[in-house]
Length: 48
Image (cartoon, rainbow, N blue to C red; front, side):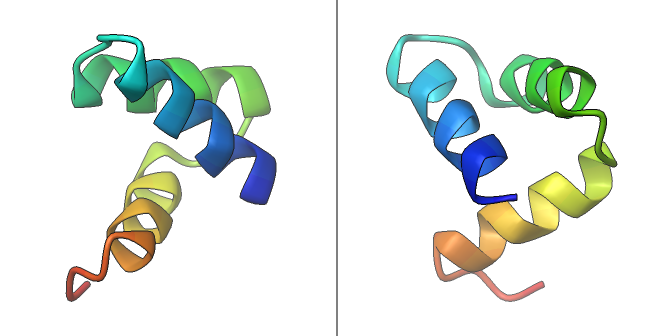
């Protein structure tokens, strides 16, 4: 999951909007987009 979060952050830093970045990352790493978004929220300090 760490590599997926790093990839997601890289996409966002390079101008890709969050929903598209999350979809691309989930597809690339073959993980659940919902699970990825929850981990991203935890990383950012948001309550899940």
